[in-house]
Image (cartoon, rainbow over the protein chains, first blue to last red):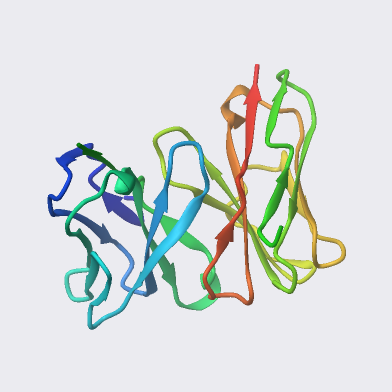
Length: 112
Length: 113
């Protein structure tokens, strides 16, 4: 079983739509949680960290449910420039701290 | 620039050859990581350096893969006797310390013919 599971999509939504991505992680020792964004043939870039209380950054809202080992990302008022692959990422406590575990990514296309 | 720099950006070679991939991390970052990303997949961890030493090399797939960071800055990933299955994008990342946010380079796209 993979450490991080994501629905690969693709999600195709019109501009202005609200879209939500989910992922689950298998190791309860996971300590830190992130969403990365990756454009086609480019490197992953940190979009936002995910905190236990939930956090928001403009149009993006991230949620964490430790009991269910579930992470979500909500994008409101989608823009064309949001089209990318969104990677769910976790970091574990202990000896593997620093090693990031990535989901396979969820592909989003926003159309005009 | 101030970001992570990887060279070459593309490498095409024949099966069985030896390749070296280079990573120049952000200045002052003590932690350096190598990942490999296959098409349609997320990056997979290979090895992590804290300073000059490999603190975690458990992601290296086999003994054909080796990495060094002799002076605690630039790192080289070395692949011997390359196989077609080694074709992937090899990503390097660095962070200020272990556990801090990681910043990725553009990657080296390796193709084994």
